[in-house]
Length: 349
Image (cartoon, rainbow, N blue to C red; front, side, top):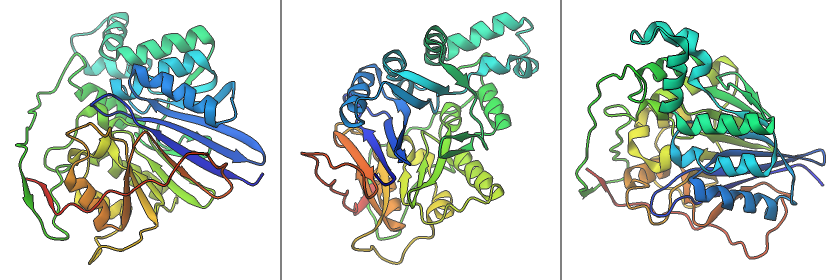
């Protein structure tokens, strides 16, 4: 069978949102299976069943990737690690860099105490590490420039990751931070008006540690972003430029953080997706994918949907399971084309 790739974005949570992504890439009649994040605990079972039902009942997964430590990305991976034979778990563990971090934490001069403190700060990462050790699964740090199968990691760099760990409010020396709250009001807006908050407010440090991955495979360009914010996306594009990777005309753009406007700015979208169009196009061929539960009242933001459509994207949201695939991928009985989100004529103030 000719090569193909299929990517499944599984709807996570109950009323909140998360990320759970399953990928199968068939190359020269060999299947390579990836899992990127696993949603909440209950989503792990759904993810396992999905892979067994639609990927020819595999016993093994080549790569499992945890983009960052948040519960809605990490919890479900525990079921995946317990159920499948996993070739490699790609995730970053701050305690693996304790010798570099110790000088930055003045109150911790004892190495083992700092390791224990960091494991308490990131409990899901610690538990995944424990399961991997029990099952003999290799764990690898994952920083900009590394490869995960056909994907190239564009962010974070090791130095950026360690700086973010020090700045995190979860770690022993938190940096004071004001949490902004927005009134839930909306106002009408003309074509091209955008009210994104990635520059002015931004997202938290844990989100900015998200592993950002790019692939050009089966004639499709794919960017998976986790919960990356403007800082991570800026670094990712700089790394892509340095590696001579052409990211122009992204076919499948995974919108970060379930469509939060704190993770994006007009400028970073211009960098990745191109400048704003003068008008809406009727049948866009390029896709923006938002992992957001249908019952989530806070995601996606209308401002983000508008910004995607301003740049010629067909915007689709997880609804059960959202599947993207290339020619030659197996057909699935009972599956139907996704319905794109409409252009909002108003947005959040």
